[in-house]
Length: 314
Image 1 (cartoon, one colour):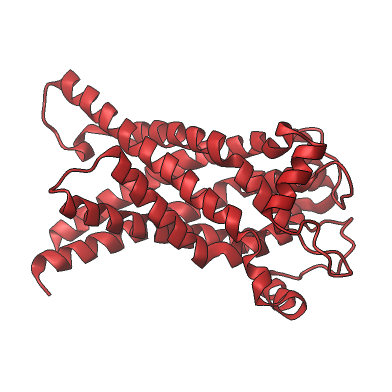
Image 2 (cartoon, one colour; image 1 turned 60 degrees about the vertical axis):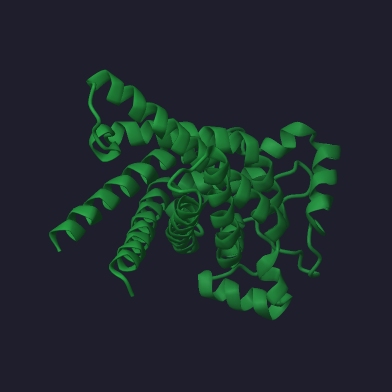
């Protein structure tokens, strides 16, 4: 193996490590809002085992009163696994794709190639993580009104799903997950990369210097870039989250799913709830993900810079 190949592989693993640490930090800080978002998403106003929440604050208060801290952190274990794995794999695949396109285009990456890199990474991550997200969703929807025998935890949920529904159940919602991963990640990372270039250019002009991006940008810049790119991605891709959450609900005691497939969700939601139904839970989603994106990119960029310093010392 050549020295350049060794450096490339080391760089890829540094990206994966930075992404995994960033993912864990994000989940730990924002999980209660994720629980609230999921419960809003699946409550279609018809038949539901979930309490009716007026708004995000009322949902948090009601869950805390009826279920305690355990309710606010339902599904935390699979969320940590899924988010850490997702971010680690995402940054790894994203960086590999960028480097491949970078070499083939003689050192230049257009917005379209950033988009293609992000889409490729999102699709690959989706296949690895869908079972984890399905278990997370089901654990988050358990509550005192739940009529089915509750899952005792992550491993019990996996065993029960496999026993009662088979392997295919672990990939319920895979179609909207693919659309979500590809579109959301592609939009977010393309926006992030392009906004990053603009900010670097503006700061470089202001300072009249040719400093590197690491020297120009600080944590406040990374936070602002992460939040801005996340908002654009959420507004476009959020309906896929609603479709996925509704598909991933636990079947009735008779083993009948609430929704048969993605198209069934779309038709029923449009018929009974209109466009608003596809954006249920977007408020806690924004409250969770906008600051979470800031945390993620601040941690990611700083961990990556730290790893670079360590590598240079070696």
